[in-house]
Image (cartoon, helix red, strand yellow):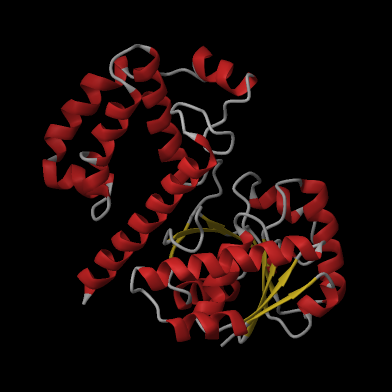
Length: 314
């Protein structure tokens, strides 16, 4: 079993992945280029753990032990020394990734797995930046990484079965639900399905079919309610493939086929109204406190849903 793991990048995704490893009992080194990035990440991890305590998912002792397993450093060699599993979660910039891969391959052991958290680049693009292509793999976590169970695993043509098996084992050890893709396809699975749904939601809003709140409510209390336990394909089985054949064939001709977002979304982007990160988007938020309240509510509900799903298996 891998005992030490390394996460490169302490940002939005990196800090959550670090937390997962540490909670699962791994000694984890978190690397970034500045101490302030690392310190901010530790604060965020501590806050995340406090919320888990509040929701009775972990104990105070669990939090203390988790934090003890995390080491932070701006020294790449120190972060990598003795590790057999590296998760790369730096900026989605190929130049930055390739520079990091080059440094990595100069210091890591030959059997060390390099797993990229990218959701932007294909395994083929990433492999151009490494010498030993058979140990490179994509492990795409979803935000917030410490709460959403899915991790999409993408292998390249040279990725060995041993690398795939070891990666899946590590992901399962940290409580994730890994899905190994048979093909490398843009957007993978989750984002392709999300993009199709969001495109239609944008279209419905643009056409004045309903208010934004009601469009979201139609998902969270309808399909989204079911999808927490059964996916769209099993939903089709339960409903009857003959029924869903008719539904798809009747609706497909009238669904949005736009390749660009509606003008009203473009205007919001150009005006800097990007959502919670700026305080306004498709919804309006009453300042930073309101934004933080909504994010906290989201995460609390994710924790509660995870507890329900976990208890449902027992």
